[in-house]
Image (cartoon, rainbow over all chains, first blue to last red):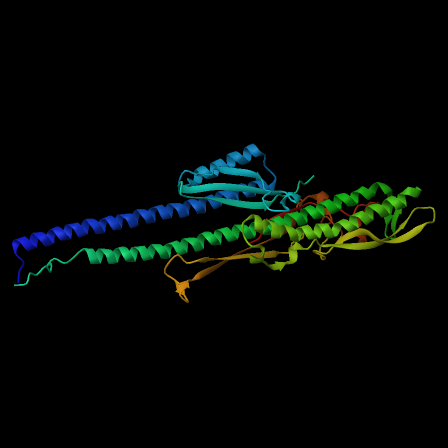
Length: 132
Length: 262
């Protein structure tokens, strides 16, 4: 039996509500995925930058000023997502017992897309000896 | 009469929820894949750091041994195929023996640091040291062998000392041999799946591994004449190569560089 005019309008209204509700959920999932992707990408790029910074330091060939400019250039090239909450720190690493007996150098790079979703990538390596 | 509320146009809610659920599941699967990719990069960089750190300490050890041995050179007058003639001063014997003894005692320390730094770098990079395995440790050996030699002072006093110089154990077939042994390091870690994969009533763990390989090279321009004429790979293979124009110069250009060879 075909629905009456009243029933038809009611069903259309219900469909519109369902549509808006479903699209809302769909959009939430979509935004969540985009943010998750950006977070993952920022973590991966922070790792690349930390590796780059540490390898520059550990080769023991460049002075600090040149290293700083190279790291800044690489960071610009990577276009790290987010606000880089931890910044970039380079220098000697002494955070593990016994590490002061060695010349360990580190680069830590903060990453994240919001204050609640952030982290730090840190890469540590032994510095090369001086050749002379 | 009973009212019928069945839509002839169909409900949107159920299919859209199914699509959303499918996309969400796909997202969880992608998160797992992204985590695997990230962890592989991270473990690869940890393997590189552990390997290079260990090799750099080997290079430093070799360079330091060569520098320390050069401290006995002022006591030596000359050398030939029979051995070493030292300064006839009475203190020269004691000084020579004391410096060589100190060097001999220091060598195990250089060997130990090559191993110890691997544990330290693994910890510093946030990985449990047993998760870093050495699949080939050839390039992590210091590669030096203690050698005895006859020493005399020109007054008739002579003695065979048990440790006088160090020969190299690498590239025995080449005078200009570079320490080309290759070492391999592999780091492993596991992480819990965020959603779709379950095993035994719990989310499954993904095991990820990534390795790195590398070694040392003798850091001199091998095509230069002065290297071909006077070089010996930094350390000699035999006593003849420790001599240079009547002088005892066993460690010539003992400079090494660590490199990745993936």
